[in-house]
Length: 181
Image (cartoon, rainbow, N blue to C red):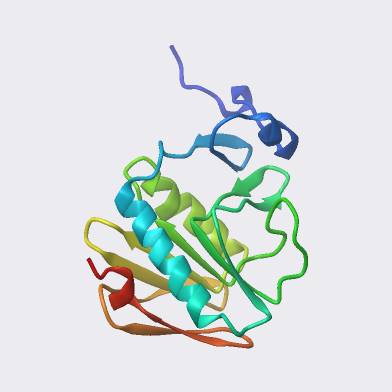
């Protein structure tokens, strides 16, 4: 049997995506099942990040932190970042309409290839200012910052503080609070 040709693969779009049951992402017209239910560790880290960000931004009327909200990038790309921070949010609805300023993805064994490669490239191409990949097992956050349309690894953190510098705000996140247990 020969190799499977790309032309024989289905190419899904947002209308198809809206009909699916379960948790999926749509990447260049291909369906990707999200991992089974997130683990306690994954959820604890996600909650800690979102809580820290919300606390930091409690007096900011321009920024919003959301978890697990679809970002419809184009008709055949719909991603669901673990945590998105959006500055100067333009509209609200079923999904995110603009590039988030910061995205956090917490790795799981079943989705780490997509997070480290496919989504990394998409976030970079669509000018997400910061992409933070969080490795739960080592309790390490890898911060990638966009410089001239290309990500550079800024640093990795298990503890300590990092200043995210955005157009209209500065967010100092203390990773000691994220990975405290």
